[in-house]
Amino acid sequence: MNLPELSHKQYAVLDCLRADELSGRELRARLGEAGFGKTRASFYQFMARLEDQKFVRVRRVPVEANGQTYYEHFYSLSGAGVAALNESDFFYASARGRVERA
Image (cartoon, rainbow, N blue to C red; front, side):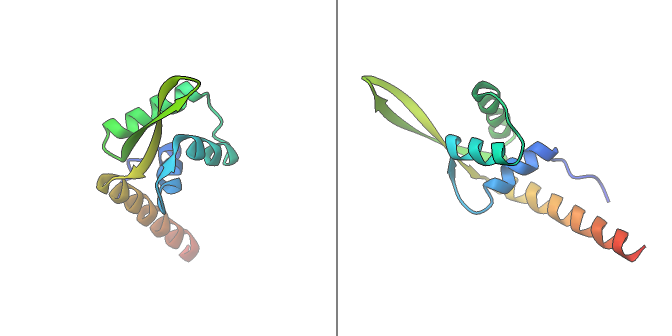
């Protein structure tokens, strides 16, 4: 059995998105609670890579504040993200079963 293609951080992000779409702010907060504290810039760079890899979809919603328009990002799993997450889940569940039988 091959190792899953996801890093632990990629898995954490996709796992957070397993049930529902989250805003970038909500996702960063959940990852921070799990010990993945990074700067906002590095978070959005990481998420852009996940989008490039087709693991997540991003929806950008324009928001006005103080006369300025910015875009709030909302993330959800893509089909490829679900498949990668399921592959990782299967790998670790199988590995756990082999360890328990040993």
